[in-house]
Length: 349
Image (cartoon, rainbow, N blue to C red):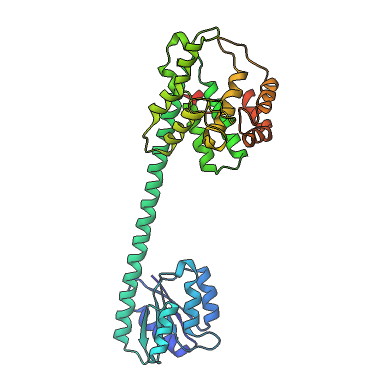
């Protein structure tokens, strides 16, 4: 344990230093100038300070007050060595952060006992802090492991959905990436953007409840078939409802509302404007854009320039204008997404 003694008297420094050095496991450093001592404490970490009350330039109370402003010294014991028994002085020192007092002239045995007790307290503080840091790291590792497992399950489930829908996973991977870019473009927090990225692949999870004859029909759907197909949003929301995970709750919002339209003509609830969850507004653009660019049993793939123009033209009717603006602002990055293989995620599984 490292002890710093601050006193403008060389004789006091020598006497106190000799007494403290007798304690096993203690390294002592002395300083005549409290100003120099404050700078020293910025460079080194001490476990206990013994500070004289009356010193020129800066007294012990002011020194202690300045010391307590440093993060590493908020809990370090500080002993005020004083010949002033005045109550006001002691209260002032306590308010500045003094832990204990030693009266001048002091009893060597009492001084040694106080130092030993305070160093034991400091050792317990350090051990407790180390334990807390270790536990924090363990919690972080465990949380990261759980999140990684949650993400893996999301991607594997999304891949199953895409196979069910006749795709191989590229669609949901691109939708996830484009959704993240749009979310960044409208200024959502990094954590929220990441959550949307991970939740977006489940936007069509309800399609597992739709019959193959409708899901894979090569021609135009009848009115009844289209009505049945629309039920996939309700099925998806029902599959995901009641989750404790923020990620799954976000996925539920997206599954339920990604077919709503800004002008209120979408489904299933005919929501409009800001009543549509922002996560669903973001994913709606990514989903429609990539669907237009993808070949389907009932249509050929559109050139991305034509799909881009369609998204822009639908601003304020189908899509949130702010999200469309973000889509346009991120267009360079979105083009890259459309030109490369899906990033590690669903395609890597």
